[in-house]
Length: 176
Image (cartoon, helix red, strand yellow):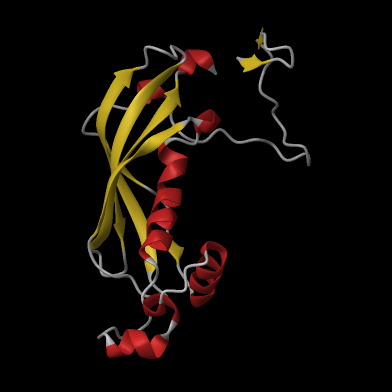
């Protein structure tokens, strides 16, 4: 159901094409498809480049020398300039969304913890894996449920570089 312009509920069907004429593709899972202990290996990765790092630093006004000055980073013992950890976090979060919370734009309820385990350097390819930690009913929004995941970001070395726990509302099959 969607809200009409007058605030009433509408049973109008979702459009099958986007405004440019391309067919819409269903992504993400319904609430009923998640169960505690379920593991999700997110199917694509992202190589984070120097351009990504410079753009992220510029857009967030984060010019910490460790992430923007190669000589400074080398003097601190890094082979290459490390990526801003928040760029790594947001990239891994983005990698996990399609399989977890993308369906019908489930409301993001928050991140409970983020552990940065080791630095990631420019040129690393990040992948993500998630585990369902909790699945529960929503008392205030019966058309959704609440799901909590622990997501790990993995770099080229096949070791986890960060872990975080997040929670989203996820639409029920009957509400779509």
